[in-house]
Image 1 (cartoon, rainbow, N blue to C red):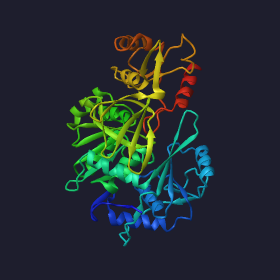
Image 2: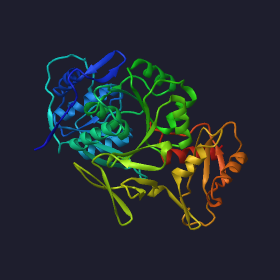
Image 3: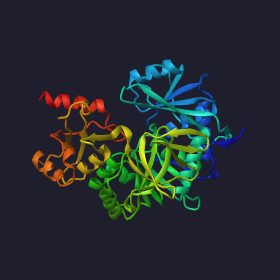
Length: 439
């Protein structure tokens, strides 16, 4: 049986950077083993930790005990109860004793004692986590993650982003550890690639600025398009080696502005919860994405399949255009393709045009549910643009969009109900629109 170590880094190397000091491999392993000894017999445990270091210690402790961590992006009581009932979950690991949980909570309070502790070689076939996403029905959809596949993606990312032990990078992530993007880049990556992850506050521009000042160079910022916009508006120039973005297509103009501001390349990661991160690109260099080492994509009919070691072939929910050299262009998510009058457009592309308008701080196109049944149905644009009028926004859009995709109305709101990753749940958006319509 093939195995992969929990930590594959030099012994004294920093893995995690806390406001109170750095954590190296032996200290991390000691914390993980101490917590593992306190876990009950179980196949699955919730990881509800909010602090990044507490989260990774809880994840590693469960791995050591042969348990799979249940990671719910939506941790509302109803979702947790449904998942706990389905998987027979026995406990929740949390750093907040008051966190809502349908099962007993085990407190995660690492003491950072450098006690002797082994670095376990874990079976690559071991189920390490089940990551849940909620589709249009709101029912949690599970995605199984084997330890070997998680290790391979970390190593591949380390190669792609040129992370080398002779100069380990400091990762400052603005994304939460429990979502797949943050899980891969800020929790798993330091275990198998040459970097250390910041575990203090890093969400608002001031937090990020302070974090960058606190960590050693070279520094890499891991963020989202929405947060990058906030950083451009609220953060001074800082010495960074690169900025990495994911979760939504990045506007090339925003990427160019960020490169000018920080004098560093802006890179994007492409992936999905089903398969994890599989490709990257430098946004200003064009639309082509390059698969990670060890990842191949193959067209099968109208679908595209992703192949990688330790992972079953995954059918992407995105439409791709394969290029002759193994790279590809992203056309949009199949569910996001809008068809009107015999023509089609990517909803993500339309949103990118909308948010690229001067004075539009945030915005989204809304597709009516009966678009495919009602010939007079039209799109709706919802914007956060206090200094722009609806007619002026429509005038700008007329210069940039096919007339078929022009919104019938532009609705102003104070803020869009985005989650921690900047994504906008459709139900939350519809509830906001209902409140607006009600006055």
